Length: 52
Image (cartoon, rainbow, N blue to C red; front, side, top):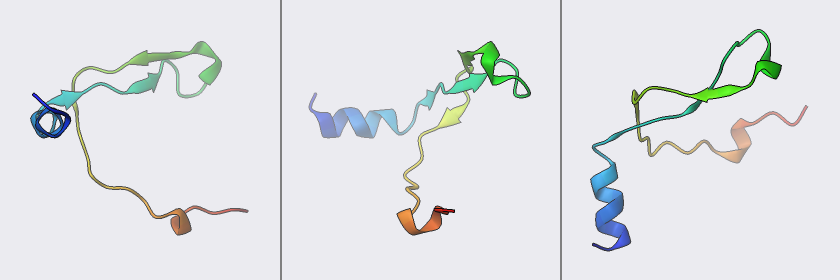
């Protein structure tokens, strides 16, 4: 299997993401989510970020 085939296989699988343990107190750390997120090909444009 090459990198392209591996990437295509990953498109149909759910992934984990880091989530805060307590969103009101981020100092409590982070944990891995359940397998609930799909891979997205969305990449925001740098112009969409505010520099203020």
